[in-house]
Image 1 (cartoon, rainbow, N blue to C red):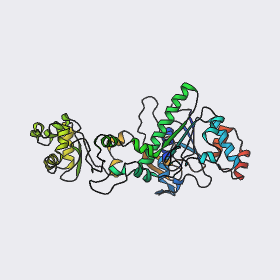
Image 2: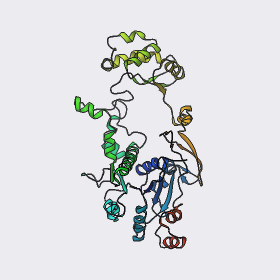
Image 3: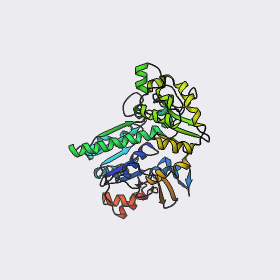
Image 4: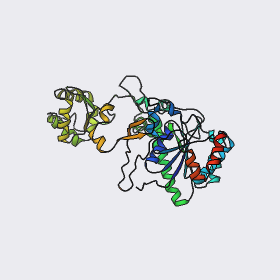
Length: 395
């Protein structure tokens, strides 16, 4: 099979989540991801639970489609090997604290002299400029500093961290977008460039309408629970046996919802005719439309609302998500076979391409599994030379 990123070689110096997520996306789309890890220790996330046959499920879930080699970048011979690999690569990705690669003598200015076409992508907490640049950051830190925690949670309740590590994941997404954009530009100019992605920047970028609301109204946005800040009705309602999410995002859908719940008279009610009016009279409206939902089960309402064309859905727990027929049909849960851990279900590839679809070709690698293979293939080293480097603790 031909993949969209066939022939693209990526040197992946990243660890934990933001960087590995970015390189996983590239690997899923066909790039050759060469994960360069610390000898004997490897990526920190190899030590994050839960474990399956002593292998980290956390690590395995975001490091598929990669080859692993170990390399000691504190040794001159290790640095020399990396510089040789850079000559043969298209992209290098790292998520160290800014300044770390420069201290090692491996910053962008050095690498681009070895390979002017190299694309150097750096993902960090606060980026390579600004007063916070050298500070360490983790997901919870940037969720707090970036404002997303301040608008997440129940109304008048404690500010809440978003469940998934969205600080890391959005940085990974933006890093992969930056790399792909730089590859397109390189096709036109023949030149590589540096990509600087900050987790804090990414949190600000995904605040959606919160900044616009504050700039226009001067009201500081606060958590609103599960209701939408601008659209009504757009939230969960209690049913006879649970809850159902309703998203009536325009006046046509509002009319269909009123019909579905047996409240057609609300369509012509002057208090609720437009979305701004429904927002203005939210408390009154919610109380009126909440009552009918309590008379039927969630499944009954799913059928009724789907027949009427009203966007809705159950609030699925993870055990239900991985069995959902739509999720399964779209191959968003895929089983992989790991040489030590055995079978593991992981999320699939959300980017569906008609001609060059991505594929989970290989499970996450064992630490250093491909060191010999990579050094032979990319640099032409023979076994004796690699053995000698191993004995010198270079990998």
